[in-house]
Length: 356
Image (cartoon, rainbow, N blue to C red; front, top):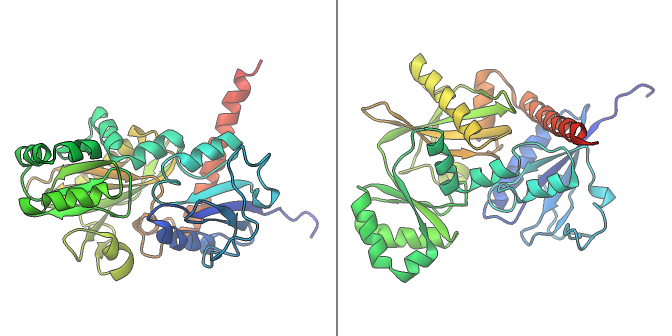
């Protein structure tokens, strides 16, 4: 039709090499479902568990075998395959090799627009140890924690266990530094279980965190924006298990959610403020979900983590919190795409000003 506006081609990156591969498929399918077909054309780009890239029919049906797949390594190809070119790329990749700055670095090298955080924020948001250092530097309240390396543990396990017993009280949490969706996380309720929890976390990462457990309500808040981020109303989750683990998130689905969280207005405002500060602490862009604790009795808030590519499944809190704040899922993904273009244009303007 003459004068018809060309659809924006959105390259949806999903799958990936991490332990959260299956969650990525669900998130990408939900994003694709909510993109207006009158304005957007979805280009599904599947990343297999072995790291190969290729076209897919849809995020809901990734190929079991990739036909004509090729490496994206710069020394293996002269240019980006034409069949995988898009106007903007939307990484829906959870965990390492997608949420940690690796894919973002590739997109930066290609100088193409993409949705979400850049390389630095993605890497910092993935590494819980670095993340907490940045939170502390900005003066955000965080729980007591220590960082351990696998080499330390293998060399002197007894000394490490003694250090933990001296620094913490029960319960405590042990988690890999670079993983999401509660994979590899253990709650330790007695000292006997500490070594097992450490081994479980080290199975996923060479660097792990031991954190002080607090009796608290678990809150989450969604953040959206670039240089002027805004925060959703906070939500509260009430885990069916001892904590919100992988099975409860994606399999059982028995966790209760309160949207918005029943909090007095001053606390709601403080959750939103701290969430924006956490977003800025890692120099985030586009989107993030911030997890917080509200300690029983003291009503003290602690910033727990930031997730720079939060889940987008039907039960994921990031889109549900924006729904509760007045921004529907379809409008949310469109806004994320707009923010991706905005960030790329701003970068190009700065580069142009530097040119002779």
